[in-house]
Image 1 (cartoon, one colour):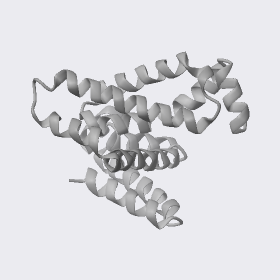
Image 2: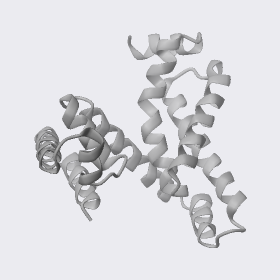
Image 3: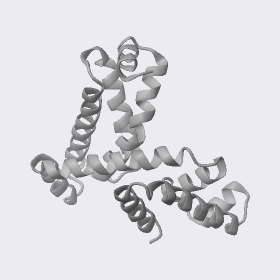
Length: 193
C-alpha cells in the first residue's frame, strides 16, 4: 500500500491502515513524550489519547506528513497540559514548561531523537526473535541482565551473548549510515551506565 492508498484507507477508517499508522508512530511518540514528562505510564496514556484525537479528526488530513505533524504537536501540547497540572507539586517542571513554550529547537531536537529511535526500533524488529526480545527488554523495558535471565528462564551468559549479537547485528546495519551508528552507539553506551 503506497502513501496515497494508506491515507485514503485511514480516512475511510480502515483498521489495517489505522494500525499501520499507530505502529509507525506509537513508540517514537512515547519516547518523545517521556522526554518531557519522565513518566513512562503517563507518556503512554498521553500518546494513546493523542491517537484517539487523531482518529476523531482523520478526515481533516490530506497528507501523511500532516498526520505526523499533528501527532507530535498534540503530544507536545498534552505533555505541556500534564506538566501544568502537576507544576504545583514540583518546581523542576516549570523549567521544562518554559523550554517547551519558548524554544522550538528544544522541541525539534526531541522530535529528531524520537525519529532516530523509530529507525533503530525498525531495525530491531528485523532481529531473530530471541535477540529482539532481549534487546527490547534491555533497552526499552530497562531490565537488568539478571531480571531478563529470570523472566526468560535462561542463563545470564545467554542474555549477554544474545545482547552482544544483537548489538553487533545492528552496528553492521548502521555502519552504512555513520550518523545512525553514532546515535545507536550513544544509546547503547547510555544504557550500560
